[in-house]
Length: 586
Image (cartoon, rainbow, N blue to C red; front, top):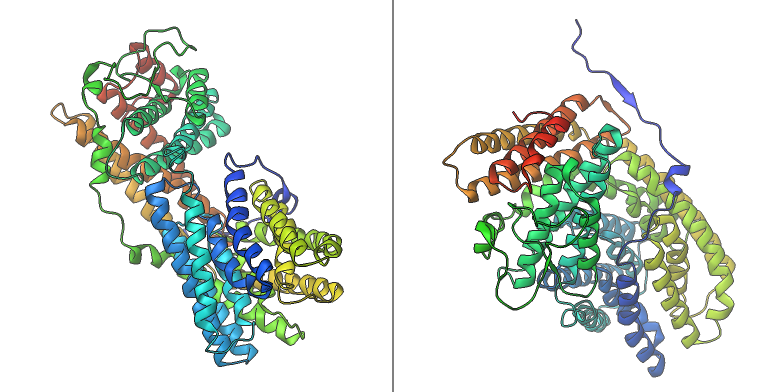
């Protein structure tokens, strides 16, 4: 028999890529933050009559878009690194622009910068808007005439605006110090409730379960990133996440109404519900919140073994684990780096060959396409083209208003900034409808330009960037996708064996059990993400999908067995019901 593995070709979606989703829970935060960060420096330059310098202050101001999902202790560091990364890319671009006017050289520098920015953002998981804003700023700066003497002053303007953006990003901390952790906990509770509602099984239930485990894992990561000194509020949030984990282990016995009620309370501005000890039921009827207590500064009211410990042992165990070194996360990103460098360079070269004055638009379009796999890259290409084509129409409509004067131009830029961040969570193409006029209006900061020429150039460069960028993505195949799935399967198997062994050991300590359960849950989340990313590659050998599903099912049974061994299930009926619906633990 032949051992060759068949290859397959995935169908690439079109209409599905344009489907609108629900807005983010915090869509208004980046939208308001970017307005607050851009407005003061830009308005000051209007007063001084130097609006031509606004492009440099805006480079720093746009850093306010980042890290809104991070706890404030982590956000301070992430924002600082984003500002430094923005200044680094801008410095390279300005130096290159001051040393040469050779467009081919400048495009090459821009493509290499785009690849570095993409890889670093992916490796550090800096999150939306990731590398796109950094690439837009550095690529545009490459084609602004500079002298070496001007570079320090322009960088100083960007640094000052970046410092202001850092303050804007940190401003809510005194008012709602646990806001990000509360939102992450609420999302975990809502996801657990959604899975409990689909606990009868089937494909929908499997998808809801994966989403719920990912949300719970994200909640733990958020809580862990909040610092090493857990407060009373943090401990209450940790116990709510434990409740979500218990609901995943015994979905048939979970109460979705109660989980959603806790999520609403956590998401609001009131006190955080205290749920007591998960090892014993709250004593109230199902669907009520009679057992919940509110977080406060008074003495602890919940009893039992868990209530006697002010810190969950698993949280302490995870804090003791050193994070993976950065270099270990860079290796799997090599295909993405090559795709980005090659696609951006070719897009810029083709744009130059067509006589474009602003080849960086094609370069940025190509840079914005590259996602975890070919299917997602194709979807982003469709979204980018549609959004940009509609966006140039919007630009043509607002240009008469923007050209009324410097103040009108700044107000139009602020409106586009707000609209882009308010809409991009629904779908990337919808946000691009506002991003496109924003980018075109920024080119008019040094002086007004013919509208028809700007629109034509943008349309051509969008099509060139999307086409050439996608062709480069197809040409550079990710041959390591299958191997990453195999490694993720091995990691799940090892984590499951360790958790099952500890669950069967009467002498296992609570800390060891909790650490093993968390490690297994994290491995399952990573397996699903790795399998989904690999499945989106357009042309590749068939993946071991059946093994992935079987590994996930076995891992979830072991997770349930570990929870039962820890005594975290709320009642004696849970074990039998869960066993009946999910199968016996290994």
